Length: 152
Image (cartoon, rainbow, N blue to C red; front, top):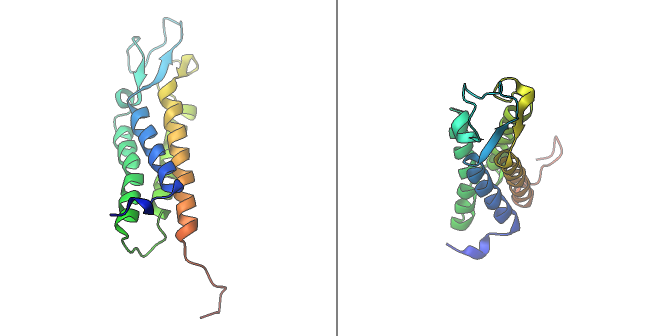
């Protein structure tokens, strides 16, 4: 393994993966002063992403591992049939969509207007965006040049 193979794009993606992993365990939602507000029947907060989202938590943990796998591939200089970073970018984009949807459009709890977002949600968003940025930069660096149609 040669650590000098890692460049800034992998380090950004690694930092994003770490932010996403930590963000899952920090508070995502908090309740307002409304005594009728609740999340999953509970009025005691704060509520972490790990507590509230049963399936999404596992998806996000797996997504947070993707940049570390990318770094391992770069360190070991494995040959791939696709540009390095492409799969990590796809996973990061999907993770961003899931986090944004569950935090902005389908906020858990009743009434949804009384549920506010907390630091863990924002950390997960920043983490996924950093993963996207780092992996897209890596993909652009190692991507194959495409030829115009009809050229062999």
